[in-house]
Image (cartoon, rainbow, N blue to C red):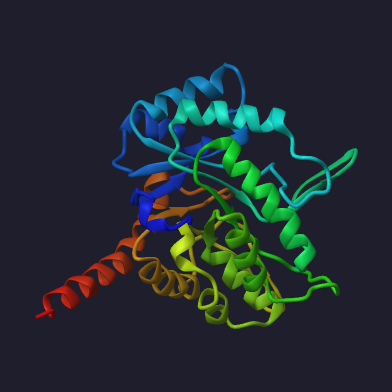
Amino acid sequence: MAKNQDIPNLGIGLGLRIPHYKDIFEKNPDIDWFEIISENFMVEGGKPIENLERILSRYKVVQHGVNLAIGSPDPLNFDYLKKLKALAKRTKTPWISDHLCWGRLPGAHYHDLLPLPYTKEVINYVAERARIVQDYLELPFALENLSSYVAYTADEMPEWEFYTAVVEKADIFMMLDVNNIYVSSRNHGFNPKEYYSNIPLDRVLQIHLAGHLDKGAYVLDTHDTFVRDEVWKIYAEVYKQTKGVSTLLEWDDNHVSLQETWDEALKAKKYQEEFMAAVAGAAGGQP
């Protein structure tokens, strides 16, 4: 059974982004690890691989994908999976993640992370495909929860029940984005605590943090600003209940300096230290 107790905690990481390459290569900052978008490096050579090798010589790297579209109706693309697995051998990534979404139809690719209907039929369909993917990759495989803006009239259950059913039926992991929990909670009118209190947090192998844009009537997952206090609050609750997993800050547009980005990610240490102090206190109180 997939449990995060067997997954290494890499510490705090950043999404590897081109605007920060110069500072990374020149200054070798003391960052725990980087997450790469797998598809950016699924090539045979050239500058992307050259840059990746420079990163790998200094840092741990984890692969995160955006193109699997596991809930799409077309057959699994084993040419894609073959390239993904080859990249995993190069990076030595400890796990691979992608999104619980669909994005393709026969003859059409929407290049978006589209939400799935929350039905038993879709659970069975996605879980079987996810099981195949994990078996083929021979690595722990995780699906990430989306930020969503619409719901289906066909939905039979809330998102957290659907998400839980998929990962448990497939026996895979969760890549939990706490900003997406908040964004979706605002857009769909549920309490974030109801979400994270009803998923198997021992299946979470990594947490994503990001910024969003609050438009009042709705919230946009933008990944282009600082993490808001309400998201840090969810992170604090979730992190301690996972008993400590790898944490990553995503910042994909309107970039600030590498140092400012890393300083934002390091805010996670406050909540991690509070958790560790509570654990130490509990241990010290044992007879």
